[in-house]
Image: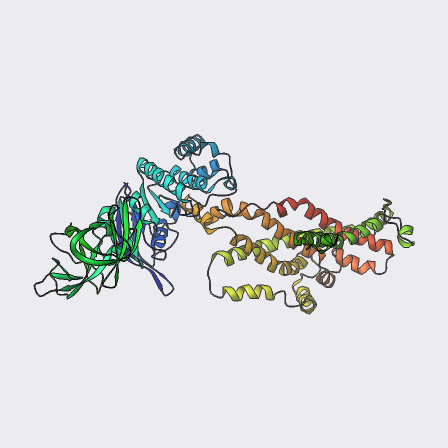
Length: 353
Length: 277
């Protein structure tokens, strides 16, 4: 029911272009995460959808209704803020009831809904308290409950977990996913934390410098980054890049090894491989080991390949020490190629998904 | 013994002495004159004029009684209350929206505007009083409660603007935005969320305006003749009066302001924990 369409949205702050021709469709009940480093425009985009910010140009549609000229209250949205924004002069009960009272629901209905959402968020025992008597995690629960009680078409969340400590964040993340799936609400969630994005999202929109670089499901974003930026942003550690030179026979020379690659006009490309997609081999890319970090399941090995940094996660049984020279073979179907000039991925028919 | 005397003194202890002394001096600064005023007002005229002074009030209401029956006295008191109340209302009605605008909106000349607000206090009142008096006589505002309240409002407004500006700035924008997403427009969000949070501060700022007006004497003396406020009335009559009457006059001037501040002290101290985190 609640599909969101964003058409050609741009936003300028004075001379600074915060958003540049954004087009995005979020389908009904989808959990969409806007992911990007701070200053990439993700919060601005969310605020434009909410109606807290006006787009310089473009259209926002919710449920086949154009809403970009409407105030926030008429858009059928609810929002959860980074610093919770729980009203300090009202009890938890009144906070959750606030929106329902504004919409003039009958008081029996309000009481019922407040108790139901409070139960859902496990805060029934806090209903009489004030914001000042709550911990950060509890406040966040109140903020989510307040949004859910509205039974909105769309719920918008602006880094809701970033002020919580690590353990609580993990707990809330799982809970949030469950609660939202149950509520059948369309959700747009802004974060800079890629693990959070991966674990919550049906689809992720990776943003960089005011534009959406790639919008796809988490696995596709991880496996098939559309641009070198995404490849270098997603994954911890991110993808490795090496320079590839075209050989006379059309194959590509990467640090002395020869690989099949795309056939294109370029003479050099960026060869990219994830650290976990390489294995130790007899022959292969020759790498000088700089740092070895045992992580339990894996060894994270940071090496030097022709002056470029290269990371590999290897089996923890491997007997490797600093200063060793090792040979690494990439898993061929996991190699990705990027054009150095614009960072776009070079498609390779048989590798492309 | 030598070891004890040569041991370094605990700096925290020194700090506590300084702190206690500072508190004592401040209290003495405020309470000393008030106490003397109190004692002398509640002493019989003979005791006030005699020497040595007593420092225990004898609860003799002769001076006060005489003073309250002084012709024009109650009228002046009533005028003062009216002018101060009017000043309080007008300076909040004008100052609070300006403070909100300064805190929430970006507009051209915002910084200049802020400085201009302060500049209204840069002109000494005696300089303005004469042209104002002429203007007031022409417009018929002279010797009226409203005219004087208008002048007092211009004196109080800069403070009202700056105090409310910092109050509004202390309230996170997100609270208002959350209210908007929950079904409020700008006005209802203000009434339901911002106003309850700043009410204590607004009260404080209103009291401040009240006290400014209550204490102001120059404009009051120049701009009123029949409808004198208490300060102007006392200025006119007391320099020729006996000492015990002066004390009674001072007492009458101080007490209402004290009572008023005492009555709303809860709002001055019980500021809500506005911090939202």
